[in-house]
Length: 433
Ligand code: PMP
Image (tube, rainbow, N blue to C red; front, top):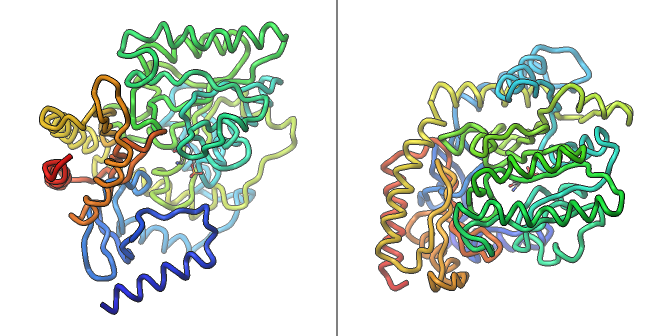
């Protein structure tokens, strides 16, 4: 039919000029045209439930956000070297969201930029260079944030191409790592010790440690209890700074907590955020202490041309207002818990379901071929995602083996639509997996 042919031609034009490493979802993707709440609509008028969009936390096409952006664009947009209300107000609001003492904000445009800046802050404040990071992690595409990214799903060469200041430590994956279950904390902490002792023996300092406080890239697996308390203490004993990458897991998505680090009962020295804080508008931030922020003055000044612009600040504040007025964190908690219970019930019926990780609206359903050996069901996961698309659900795989369903919908997801997703997944699984 004509619309399908047009859409295929457009995909060819994309492939002709849009650089290839920028992948698209699906071999035969629908051409989407508009979005509303947790739905996307394609050019043929077909509606899809968007269960993967971890950026659009308010939902698609939010009229209040669109109106605020429109008004601010007409009034003023410039850079943060000028004095205007929005930059003062937004910085104050971000500082108020963070634990006491973390009261100083840098405004940038993405998660990669926020993590890059966090690494530079750790280097400047510690006068050291070495950084610890976790295996299976992802922190961004820029040179420094990519250096501490070790996920082999994102970059198959990651483990052999890290610069020498990067020291990955064993991934504390309590589901498929060498130590399993909540009792494995001691073993995972013990695996960090030799890396630090090696640096001590060489007389080298430690600049810090970066990680996600809930294991996002691996599918929302919680770190073992008390893990970060112990690792943070080991890092700080050597003068290092602890960076919490809250780009995906922070900002209310976990429902039960606003920040991922709350779940581990720690307070980081530097917090990085992006994604949801702009609901899709390019926004990122670093929140830290005054003393750590000031350390960057050794290198002169910091300036981002669009970071902290009036439009960006108004986007950030409107997102916070809408989250509060529509009680989206609470919705993530209630609908997320309901969704998790229903997914766990599927696990009783279908052996392919190995585990349901995560909390709130940050869930990962891991498919395995065998619950003893945990052989990842990678091809099955891809086929299930393709079949879900036919049934009107957008879903994608994540994790080093691409065998985990990445369940991160807009935080406005209704209980009825959560049920629709599980009903469709149940139907696909009943078809023969
Ligand atoms: N940190 C984490 C945990 C992420 O998931 C991502 C993006 N997937 C980033 C950082 C990088 O953010 P951005 O794409 O905004 O640069």
